[in-house]
Amino acid sequence: MLLMPIALYALTIAAYAIGTTEFVIVGLLPTVASDLQITLPLAGLIVSVYALGVTFGAPVLTALTGRLNRKPLLIALMVLFIAGNSLAAISPSYPVLLFARVLTAFAHGVFFSLGSTIAADLVPENRRASAIALMFMGLTVAIVTGVPLGTWIGQQWGWRATFAAVGVLGAIACIALAVLLPSRLHKAPVASLTAQVRVLTSGPLLLVFGMTALGYGGTFVAFTYLATILETVTGFAASDVSLILILYGVAIAAGNLSGGFFANRHPVRALAWLFSAQAVILALFSLTQHASIPTLMTLAALGFLSFASVPGLQLYVVKQAQQFRPGAVDTASVGK
Image (cartoon, rainbow, N blue to C red; front, side):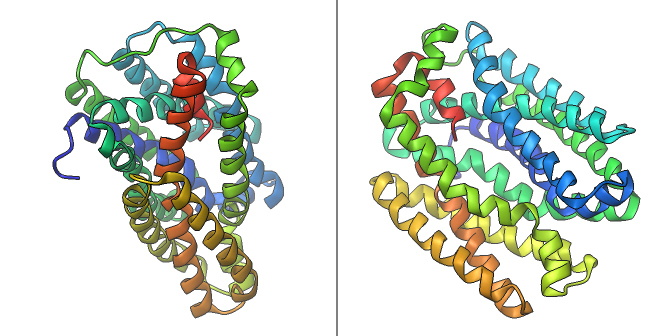
């Protein structure tokens, strides 16, 4: 990892900021629900709306911005990211907060669709999965440090202070991209919006997207309400949640780095084993969540497995797109 091009670390820093804002809401859901006087399921929609913003907004924005140079585009995306988090920090109501999360989600989706292909292009082919893993390590480090710290800030000074702090992270990431990223980056031929939509007619790509949706569906349902499960089912105090999120994040970091190694040679074979193990652990969590020690052990295993498949999936979808939809590689990588 230390021998990777320095430009990859700019992508990692930006991924750290984006990962923090994506996942920090999980530890803040009870606080947000109480402050805005809404139900917990309604607060959970904050996570769902963010995901929908990534899913539907990112492909359209990727197509519309295809002619732009990649470095200025990535910097513009971080400016949008800062704006979204700043709006969240001053949100007076639930609808405004939802809108702010959608803005941030747009930046998220396009950034990772571009970032994955850039990361893969910066290294030899046999190191592409590891390069993608390094970029996604920003997400895992965010879960280890940014999410627990953001949760603690929210518990101490309110959830709005957390989003303000994330906005500052976005500014740091913007500077890192401006300084470390090369001015000239490889850019795939520009595809029309119609060509981008044709990604959804490719059987091999739809299979990868289905793997992503099914593989992460169960994990992220559990993760979304993790703070509530830990407090109301397992019986942990609210002050313990930040510490448990650190444990979960460390496991995710280990899984992400290991996943890059597993997927370098045989990504499909690695994914089959990883998703099988993940299914077993999720089933086990339904039994262990009532006791503290078994819960912690299960969460550590779940954290490891949930991100171990990320590099393999991202590499696999890029390879499939290059073969079946070469004009829409960036859009295809949004699917992950």
